[in-house]
Each structure stands twice: as C-alpha cells, then as structure tokens.
Length: 221
Image 1 (cartoon, rainbow, N blue to C red):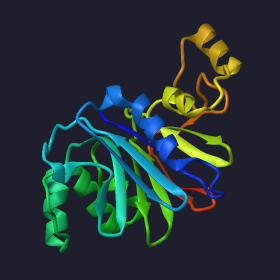
Image 2 (cartoon, rainbow, N blue to C red):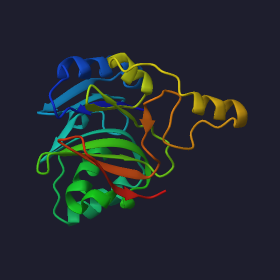
Image 3 (tube, one colour):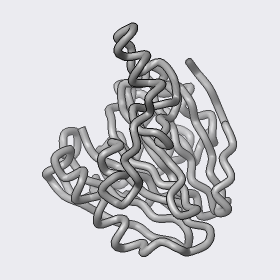
Image 4 (cartoon, rainbow, N blue to C red):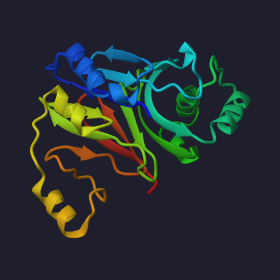
C-alpha cells in the first residue's frame, strides 16, 4: 500500500507546494517509508512510499523515467515477464521495481498498455511530451483513486479524506448513503459518500490535459 495524490491546475490558482504537502500528510499512514513531490507548471504529484519489491532509492517516487514521471500504488504481478519483454524491445532499466516497468511499458506501448498488466494498481503518469496526465485503476477496482474539482483544478488522491485535508468541502452524498442503508452497497459506481468526489471506474484509464479536459483512453471492466 502506498499513497498517491496530485492535481492539474490550468489557471494556477492553487498553492501547489501546500496542496502536495497536505496530500502527503493525509496519506502518510499509507506509506511510512518516504515521500516525494513533483511539479511542472499546472501538474503536481505527491507520493507516500511503502517499500516492498525494491527497497533502494532507485524505486523512490515520483519516479522519472525519460520524459515521464509516475506515482503508483499497487503491485504488477507479471512485472518480471514484462521487464524481460521490454528489455528485448530495447528499453533500459536502472532498478528492480515494478514502478519502472510500469513507466517503461507506457513508453513502449502507449495509453492502452494497461491491457498487458496483471495485478492491482492506481497510478498517474505525467507525460511531458503531450503535457498530460495518464491515470488508471485496475480492472477489479482493488486500488483506490478518488478525484474532484477544487478551485477550478482537478485534484486526486488515494483517499477522499486526503482531498478534504486540502480544503474540499465535506458534503454528504445522500443518494449513496440511502443506497447503502437500503441495499448494503457502497462501491458500484463513480459516486462516493462525499458529494462532488468521484472514484475512477475499475479498469478505466483517463488522460487529463493541461486544461483539465478529461478523455477516456481505455476501459477494461
């Protein structure tokens, strides 16, 4: 378990360092082994690390791999096989983490590379070539990814409480609450218990450009 968060702020209205720091503080319990931050214009990323596969600093996040920077929570079960395939295709590696495999796979195969993954994940990849953020959640929705609009910016995190910690209003979603009370279900759609906070659909990959325009790149539900 790790914690990820960040924003796309096209108008530059956010205090970026404060927002990223607030996200990291709120997600510290998910990743006690370190934290890291990244900022490039309207794009910001924060990460809290739980080191498992590669304990070295080579696996620290946000991880820069060529023109992309990634924050990631999860485990890619077939990362060794993908690593071998990517090496054969000419992709170089400097560490042993599945995070680097994730970044190299995106560079090799593009937005729909998640179809090759086996595992559980939630990630955001900043691509400086296209000035966009590629965000994805595994097909079973095991790893969380929540997002909202805050002061005209798109804000995301591993937990809705982290978004509240930044300053997003805590308003109850009465429809979701009623469905939970009536049927005992709480995780079957984009809505959450917090009005205005959505979760990325299981198996969905979206691309967010510098204007916060969201495009669905892939669905594998």
